[in-house]
Length: 355
View 1: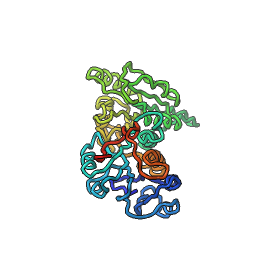
View 2: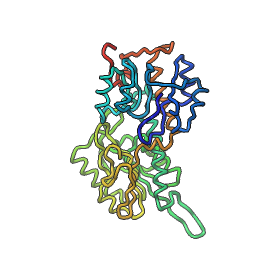
View 3: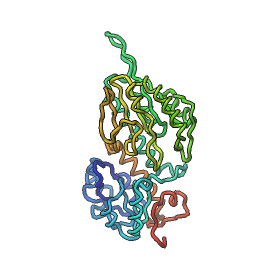
View 4: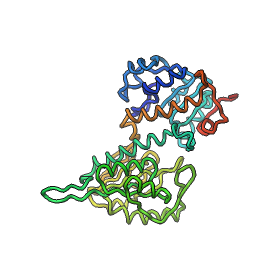
């Protein structure tokens, strides 16, 4: 496992507990010195777990969090395996470079969403962290209490929070808002998730649209559906103190759900947290990575929220990675990739010729 080079990336692909697990299965683990610093894991903890400190790039399997740089790809050995978030849909040039380098690469975001692969579902594990953190961010920027407070000076009503997108991040955001005492409401273009929204104690906002897609994701709306959705959402959004958006379509620009007009009509002091900033944003006024004040409305478009909670985010991600690693090795701990396995074939973005 190498040091993560991406700016602001504090997560790591291996934690000591996972090193112990892999060592017990006969694998040798090499960790680059300082690799765990961002997640507050000292080198000594890795050594105690059985890892060796050293140069990791020549290993049979290299595990990462962020996509490798061209320089890092050049350090991978011909015939080696790389596992990490590789952005195959948005940064296809990475796959081309990996293929040219003779590397067999597996993208964690391409793990098939089937029951057998749940332990490897890094998108879900990291979305849980992002949804939780997004609600805390909303509470931090809000000028109002989240819970109802009854005091000698009177009663303060609870904040009203709307979460757009009821995937893993959205459901976690709703559950966290509920725990903080807000009156939470969820919306998604997939009406079948209404029961999931209600299961975390939130109300369901029904706009009468259905855009159920494949693999658990929403499909892209038609132009007519998008216009109708925006019109209905704009009318609904104005009644909320907090709006958290989580809607994304893999490989495409994030849909616009919160228009400039909707923001303008919100009550001053309200907050919009846009989790889709990296793919264009769900809010028309979002600036990726920045906090914007639009006529008294605070709009936050954070990048890489899971990295702000590196300890638990790394623990979850490392378990996802180790589950995939275990699928790629045999009982003796030697590399034995079975491309007939649907998880292996589904997550593979480059394959060395002859393999």
